[in-house]
Length: 56
Image (spheres, rainbow, N blue to C red):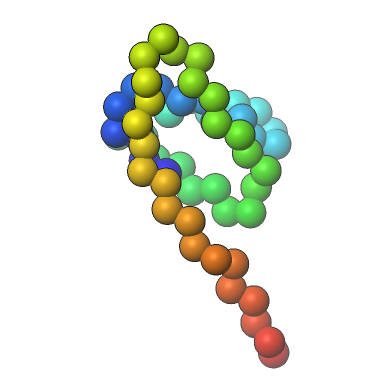
């Protein structure tokens, strides 16, 4: 996830992280929530890939 405009708070299992323009975060298998506490919209790019499971 990469912020393009505005600011978001990412609530993680062990605390919150604030993302601003240009900031990125990788959320691998963690519980998370996104929150915009600002009065202006936040725009971001979020890419999700399926979990790869080995059949070995």
